[in-house]
Length: 169
Length: 263
Image 1: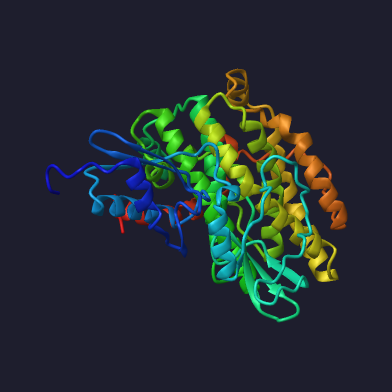
Image 2: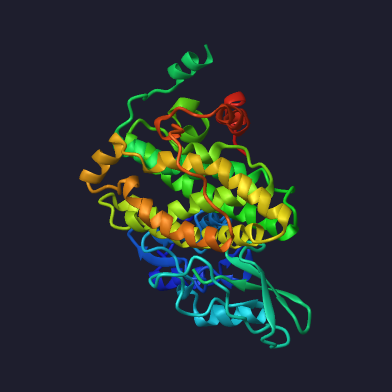
């Protein structure tokens, strides 16, 4: 890399990260998903702190590589990506703009008041969601597990279309 | 013969209670993750195929965190792969229940339900662990376990309170699997050391919380647990069933045959 490149400021780095997509939800940036927790600019390096979504999320390694690559292209000489487990990631960290984009994609956003804190019943009948296509409340959850770890499968009983929900966690 | 050769591979047969406690949980979620992944492409319906694979993925993710941490605490330079793929059978500390074959779908969900109902109060108790990494892993994993136990509980009720055939199979699974839960709640020397150091909870203290979750679901499912027996499995002590070797042979084959292979 060229010597004497102006060091990336933290604000610059955040701007770059806003363009790094999540590999499984390409419409959303890693910032909108709430997995970038901090950016620290030091003399010779940019440190990015990320909190992974699910323990077994196969996208996690791709996300770290994409962050590294994007910042390097933007001129950061050294990029350090640190994984921070606590506090654990929650869907409450998804930005409002991210939630809006999810819905536009046909994925019902998780809503607020995620799984943490209040004790949950061991069995629960989920409240029906509004269908992202026709708006009907007559919907059925088919499974809590969908195409990725973070999504559940639903079906609209009116327009008969399947749709996904970003599970609150 | 094989056992003694394996013993030579295991560099640290005298693990500390801290490492052993981490391996109990890490090995249990790893082995159940391996078993559940056997369903991939074979589940009765597509939705369940996806669900079981997703749950397996969560479990393997949890085990990666725990085995990495166990390797760090052990301090002999073993990473998650060395822990998962290069330890011999007797170094594994998973509960015996998780290594048993899947059987039919009903047996798989009954086993999953019994085990996830243990993980939930375990993670809760570990939130206050003096080991900050373990507390962080617990805070993350408990959210995932909540979905796992709910999913299995739904199926236990659906099958138990279902047709004559599904009820009979679920009850048979419960009769066969229930005795393997007894070892979880026996007093264990590792528990004592860990509890007094504030690192973790005694598993025997989880029995009540476990029963409070399990019994209402079994009642709703019209299933009845069998009477207690003196039978004790000993997976937590590193003495495994005849199924464990077969499971490890498949899980570890690649790293044993091609050490350090990556792709």
